[in-house]
Image (cartoon, helix red, strand yellow):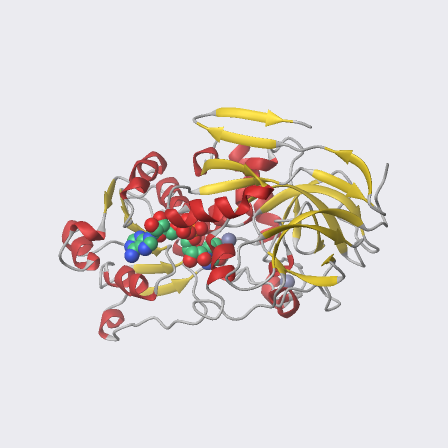
Amino acid sequence: MSTAGQVIKCKAAVAWGRGEPLSIEDVEVAPPKAHEVRVKIVATGVCHTDWEYLYETGKGMKFRPFPLVLGHEGAGIVESVGPGVTKFSPGDKVIPLFLPQCGECDRCRSPKTNHCRKNWDNTQMGVLADGTSRISCKNQQIYQFLGVSSFSQYTVVPDTSLTKIRSDAPLEKVCLLGCGVSTGYGAAVNTGKVEKDSLCAVFGLGAVGLAAVMGCRVAGAKRIIGVDINPDKFDKAKVLGATECVNPRDHNKPIQEVIVAMTHGGVDYALECVGSPDIMSAALESTADAWGTCIIAGWTETAAMKVMVEKILMGRTLKGTYFGGWKSVQDVPKLVDDYMNNRLELDEFITHSLPLDQINVAFDLLKSGKSIRTAESIEATFIRGRNKILHTTLAYFFYIDRIFLLLTL
Ligand SMILES: NC(=O)c1ccc[n+]([C@@H]2O[C@H](COP(=O)([O-])OP(=O)(O)OC[C@H]3O[C@@H](n4cnc5c(N)ncnc54)[C@H](O)[C@@H]3O)[C@@H](O)[C@H]2O)c1
Ligand SMILES: [Zn+2]
Ligand SMILES: [Zn+2]
């Protein structure tokens, strides 16, 4: 039975306040308004940025309003579309995008950037084009993180912040293309334009850094040095293309000096995928002074990075990347194709798979360094209109040592 035009009651992980664990709540998701699409989220990755907004707002992050539904690395199926939507139909497989591509603004028309500003100010403040959110709980508006909110079984997004993908794509894998993997991979191949036979160093081997390693490998880099203070990340980095790995804690001199010595003068490309201003400076200084390029993918909104002028005078380049430079609507489906055609790795990034109600466990795994990505299975209790339960499925996925357990209630 169609749910189009009706309020959908479902489960979501609500962040009621800064620093508080997420709480699984019954929420109401309103029908999409003009140029909006309501999506049934099937799976979502848990990105460091989600954790940071919850626990570091006001520290490394600017203030965002609460209560909030986090999550911006999801994939799902279109449930219904609002007036004026022409590119999506119910049943389409889609990936919501925290970075839109309207195709019309000056940024979208320029080949120099992917930073479309459509609905930007609103989505950064947790609302859609009309200044309100479509999610509510206990008669209170719940803000939508970056206009997405994938930690909810249903969400509503602008039609310029969504891309249609091929129908055979596994949503519990390609959700990672909604943020982390696309960002790191694109940081290397788009923003850095890493060249064949070059020397590279990747600082931070979480999902973003590992994807940057993969990007360097695909670009044909000769040496790819993975840098992390957690040596448990090294095996996976080598699987994805790192030729060697370094733990800064094993050395008694600054890591940039270690890398410069290892490479007899510095790397051609250094990618910072941690989000620490000190590591950004170290990454810059680990590049060759005459031509090295440092790409910043790690995120901080409040801290300043120290750049000694002398360190760039000889010819280094410092660049930032947002969503890996990909034009989101047009490029994410191509990345899905690359995954389906075995040109891009995603499976290696998923270390744990948990149900939505284990979301705080997923955050703990992310912060403890035990996971690279936990994909939350969102397909669960589905309740429609007036508290009437139409259909209930609870799907629990656990991929631990390749054991796949599916419970359907
Ligand atoms: N630019 C963008 O568009 C964009 C998009 C997504 C994520 N990000 C940012 O990218 C960063 C990485 O995200 P992630 O999801 O991969 O995070 P993550 O937490 O999974 O990985 C971070 C890694 O950095 C390592 N690390 C910590 N301190 C270190 C140090 N001193 N030296 C070396 N390594 C160190 C950790 O051990 C960990 O392996 C975050 O800052 C995130 O907010 C940016
Ligand atoms: Zn992210
Ligand atoms: Zn645009």
